[in-house]
Each structure stands twice: as C-alpha cells, then as structure tokens.
Length: 240
Ligand code: NDP
Image (cartoon, rainbow, N blue to C red; front, side):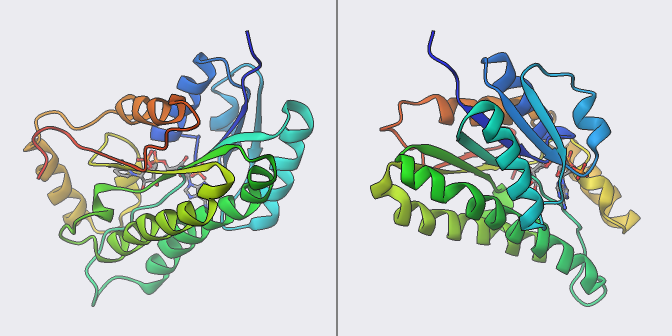
C-alpha cells in the first residue's frame, strides 16, 4: 500500500475540523492538527498525529508547526483551512472588535495557511488546499453581515488563487456548508440573536452534522489529482 500524505487541519479542536481529523485518520493519513485548545486536540488521541497550539492569525506559529510535521511525515499533501469564528450582530451596534476578529481568523487565517504550504506544493507540482467557507459565502442571512463578508471573500480569493496555482497541478477546493450542529454559534454575544438562530434551525428539521461536512471534504480530496472539484455547497435539505 502506498504511503498516505500528510494532512494539515486548522481548527481541529471541535466541530467540522474534529470530524475531518477523524475521517482522514480513519483513511490512514498522518495528521498535523492545529488550534488554540491543545487539550482538545490531544484528547482525540489519533495515531500518527502531531497536535500543535497555533493561532491561525499568527503566520510564524503555522510555519513552525508545519516544518515540525514535515520533518516527521514528509511534505504536506493537503491543507484543510477550517478554523473560523461566527460572531453574529447588527452593523450599528456590534462591537467592531468582533468584526476585526472575524476578518483576522476567517480571512487572514486562511490566507496564512495558504502562504505557508503553497510554495512547497507548487515546487512539487502536487497538493490540495481545501478552504471551508459557508453557504453564507454564497447568499446573505440576517445578522450575518461581516461573517458573510468574510466567507464571500474566501470564495473569491480561493478561486483566484486556484487559477494562479492550476498550472502547477495544485488543487483549490471551496466547501460551503449550511448550518451545522457545532460550537460555532456559542461565541455570538447577543442572546436574542442566538435564540433567533436556534429557532430558525428548528425549521430545518435536522441540520447538517459535522460528519456530513467531513464526508464532503474527504470526497473532494480523494478524487484523482487530475480532478479538481472547485466548490461544494451542502445544506440541510430544508434550509433556505
Ligand atoms: P467550531 O466552533 O466547533 O470550530 C471552530 C474551530 O476553529 C475550533 O476548532 C477553534 O479552535 C478554531 N479556531 C477559532 N479561532 C481560531 C484561531 N484564532 N486560531 C486557530 N484556531 C481557531 O465551529 P465549526 O466546526 O462549525 O466551524 C468550522 C468552520 O466551518 C468555520 O470556518 C465555520 O465558519 C465553518 N462553517 C460552519 C457552519 C456551522 O453552521 N457550524 C456552517 C458553515 C461554515 P480553538 O478555539 O481551539 O482555537
């Protein structure tokens, strides 16, 4: 059996990132898992895995974690840029510090990851970068203004960088899930907005589970290298 490539997953300490880590591990890959909550990464106890406390807004932290993992497992085969925050709010009342955090994590965090792994992938003429956006990167929702802004940005720059990297045989994939049962909503500070969101989710019957998104990530990655699934948008069947 051929040796499986190194997969780097940001934000693997909960939700979609955690489910993706389990799925790639099950498929036999060595992993580098990044997040700020190191205890949650280590608690997964996945084999052939390096866990590193990394804030994705810090380019140097990503760089040194990737260098450490590449030394042990060989070059990065795939980066899943998954870390993100959703701080819902209304434009005239929301604390701009929350906008700043979303821009830093959801945009700069993703770009930082790309910046670290893309040069090696271009040199090797092989690799896959999967950016986790959202259906909120395709259409708008109430109280989502800046979150939508960051996710629309992920679609835009991922597609542009895909064009830049395609002649080097590097694949760029955007995965845009609808509402998923995770910790994501728990950081929104307005109780009213959280309650309204929870109410809205009940209209869907069953929202997506993290494993549904992990399956899409793995499916896109496992296509032959000559096939690039540029974008997947997946939602609960009843989501608007
Ligand atoms: P969770 O809140 O469960 O997971 C978010 C992850 O991001 C955590 O592991 C968290 O780790 C990590 N993270 C946040 N900030 C940073 C940072 N500065 N540095 C490193 N890691 C960070 O939510 P989800 O699993 O739902 O979210 C994963 C991705 O999916 C996000 O990009 C989100 O926008 C997207 N998404 C989610 C949807 C949903 O409804 N849940 C729908 C569509 C897209 P830690 O706190 O330990 O650093």
